[in-house]
Image (cartoon, rainbow, N blue to C red; front, side):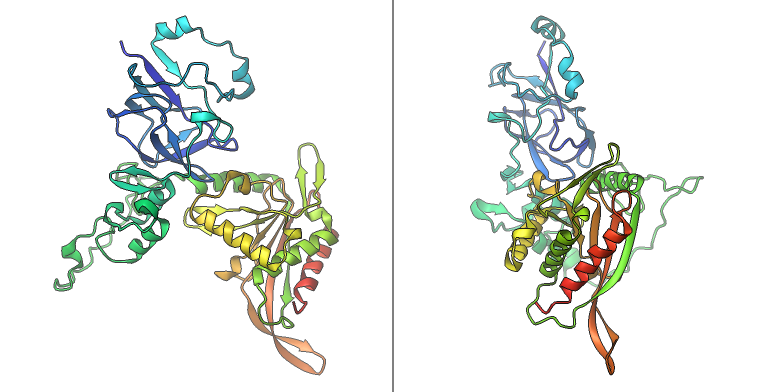
Length: 444
């Protein structure tokens, strides 16, 4: 009887409760060698490749693309190949799925393991491992003859782009994010499902198919009429990855924080040419944090403990099709306008490529959102614990402003400051917003 190996989903970073299958690199029944790419998994923070924990045949997987797998649950099962290299039995990182309780459990004897004919993984925590247990999240691998990183494959799947039809522009023939975006914008056969006949200019345009309504049950709820793994409009769809984590975080924040919001308009009439709006917002935020340190803080609602921070690490809200990312602009209080712009550009590029380190998505001391570049004047931005404040900028507008001797047309920036009223007073919040307004009123 061949020995079986049960591989459980390791913690892919920062104690995340689950991850979503993006793409299996091999099919059930295929063989794989130790440390070869096994599966690409999407978490709330990144798309990472999980290497094979052993050499052998893949017998069973936890599900196809789009399946959500809980951390510590069975991800795959293998039939070990004794002729191929295997992980040394003593090569254990000391990290386990069950935390402290699991560490207290007695170890299973080798004799008992042999009787069962089955082995289980050590529950490696990604980011805290060494040697060949490291999960390689940056390497482009070849699947189906196409070399691309997991984030590129995930974007192609989302946009319906056939990677095999793309001419790669990256080094060593690697398909890049830009390649996929260009293919998605080009009505060519690179879009999966497109046919030459359908795109031929000589063919007469066919009438659009009649609109079909979503099937509903007797209770009035949407009724699934297609397989769970197939995405279609009107079909119930489980939230995955970033959106799944966003749902948890927002619900927790709404339940814990005593949210209060102040609104006002910053007058930018005195601004000189060349001002960077986002850089000025960061500078104003830093100035206000010095004036009122109580908003550049963390708050433990259970212990009723407040921590004031000497540095200002600004969480910059970045909107993506996958959901909301909030990477941290570290030490913003030490950066000039150029440094702020370079830092923000770097963070946005990393978010777009899904290569932002997990460490950069936590630990910020205050948040900034610039939703106004899309639409909207005022908002009620959500404060996410342990932070206690977030500043949001609305859409710039021109308005008539009374001045001595008449009225003038000034450019105004709507601002919304949300704060946790459990530990921030109304006076502190008002003085903080006043400091922001005064700094933004300066010419440069």
